[in-house]
Length: 248
Length: 166
Image (cartoon, rainbow over all chains, first blue to last red; front, side):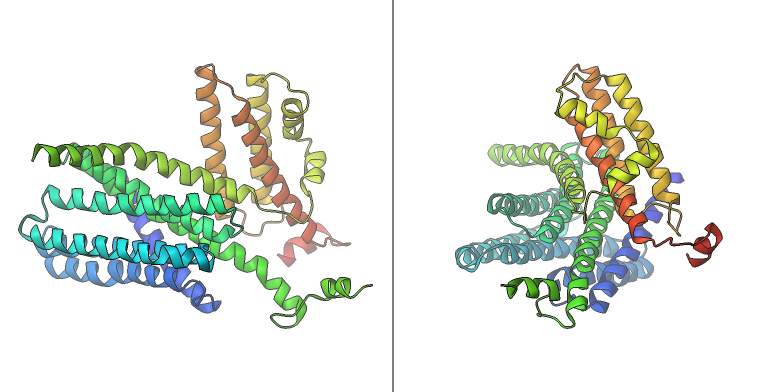
């Protein structure tokens, strides 16, 4: 009873945070800088609020249609997250390095998408057995690995982009928890405890990611803004700094 | 088939081991990045003096004098500072009367590091790093509080004037 209540509270908090972040990015005009994040958040909202809700109300929780819609949208979201990590790579890299990495990332993304499509279509008759857990575990594990590679790269480059580092940390939390949960379900051949763990861990990890993203977006927006305001308009050197430059 | 089975099991075992480890790693790194926030200047001194907090002395003892960790004493001192600071963060110049999201996040982190401190003490490992981490969390809290107090212009306001202005 209490577990269900907590799960519902987490679910509603996740949805409220998703909505808040979308509105915040649009309202503050940050959608261009965070276009990838915005698209991912809109997809999360659309999947939770439209697609899954429709199948849930139309066919019921225990229906095959709902199960298919749930897992297929989950795969789509994972692929989108994979694309978002590639966008983070673009933001982290200097142009020369990006030219080298771009092709590899595109090839890896196409490979992952193609393997996902082929595996799903090959197992479409027994999709809801252990296959989907194993498949998602591998997909999530690939995302975690790519994300960790990006994190290591940021660390090695001594990147000063703290916002990006926090966005990457959020993404890591989003995938690391469910990867372990899915693998545990796979290893215990659908053990009840593993299911329960996965059921509670996945929304908590999404909540963690959204909290970190909210912090990252708000903190670095509020820090930058006073400079613009003080200087009158964007791109102008602040008065004191300007005076210092022409002081002697 | 056997080969595929093994590969599949290896991937699952790797995921079970690496997943929680990476989850913990990203969580701790996020906390460290929040703590790394730069303040205009060191606001924490005034808060420490006004409230007789002890964490700067704990840190000084460990960093400058290389003193051994007095587990019971340090833990009590840091816990008391934590309670005082979280109370002040909730109630001093705070119209909402509750911690912000990042402050709440850091209180969880503080409790996680206290747990680590207890475990390292039981296992008779070095507690130094955990104690220093706790002092840096408390310094952050004191800085946030000092910065907040610094931005409020009390002037010749009375207590009721201030509360009405919130």
